[in-house]
Image 1 (tube, helix red, strand yellow):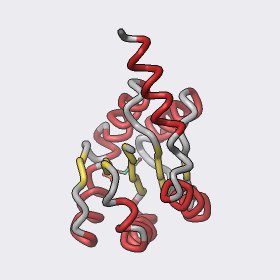
Image 2: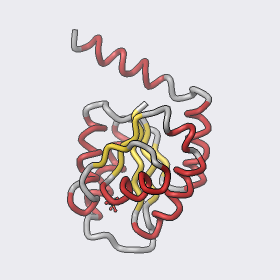
Image 3: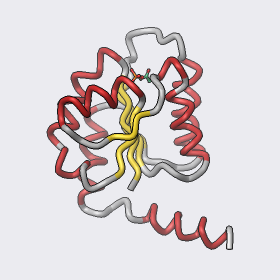
Image 4: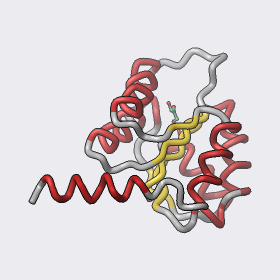
Length: 139
Ligand SMILES: O=C(CO)COP(=O)(O)O
């Protein structure tokens, strides 16, 4: 599974805690992140992470593009609801694309916990079926 991890600055400590706690699950998957989030997680956990640009510089849009191409299976985005972001339209666009493509999305720790446990139990394997159908439609 391809998993995107994103956190606004005030939520980065939560994200590091989350990635540390679930490292053994995350390391079985392909992890993507926006620039600074990815750097912080990699430093703290040693996880191998593909890093896009920083969020305000287009990272959210890069992840959005992967979603639109059916190349992302799960998004964990600890956004900060109490601080205005200069790239708010990009944040909204990313969340919107998750809904357009029915991509499982957690925007807080409570939901992220449930999704990661579901992932560990194989409950997201329906995504592989979606990938299979996508491949067939291009044959
Ligand atoms: O701003 C972000 C998401 O909107 C996150 O970007 P960084 O991981 O580069 O801080």
